[in-house]
Image (cartoon, rainbow, N blue to C red):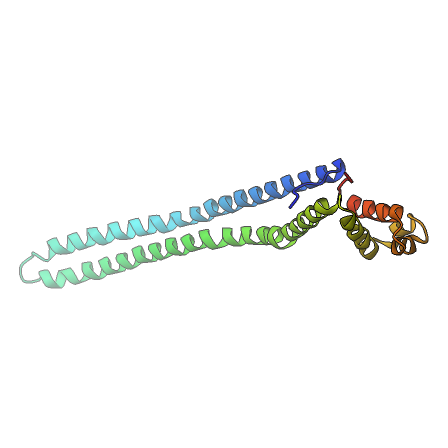
Amino acid sequence: MKPYADRLPTAIRQLLTDILVVLWIYLWIRVALWISDTVEKLAVPGQKLESAGAGIADNLADAGGKVGRVPVVGDELTKPFSGAADAARAIADAGQQQQDLVGQLALIIPAIAVAVPMALVLFLWLPLRLRWMRRAGVAAAVRDDPAGRDLLALRALAGRPLSELSRLGPDIAQSWRAGDADAVDALAELELRSLGLRTR
């Protein structure tokens, strides 16, 4: 496979396109990281909620334990503290659940943000680029061989627009069928030029 064209304008265009694609990918990766950081900041209230709930639950449980030592009525006095401690633990659990949800969103949203641009690169740009590299590599390999030049001429007749073919003369197809070397060379040159390649 041939990575870049021989002719300067085509090679510069390909190089600039490749650089832009790399920058495009880098930009979207940076955007995804920024989104992830921003979403993770949403977990701070959940952390505070979990910390406060756990602290309150521990304090209430400790107070309930001390009140429980009071003779005769200790068990009765402990129940409200135990209930309040359970409610504080539920608040702490809610804070933890919020953090878990934010953590999942911090993975999913950036992945979606990167997936669409990457899909454009993988399914639009990359197949076209690889197809050109494959075609140019084969054309470069056969351009010096007379049979290869004939194949390039046939490819030009089959694939180039009529406006380009008519510039080579009104009887270019007939000249090619007759085996005219100048017609074959002109058609091969037309196909090579369309790929950005030079004749040797």
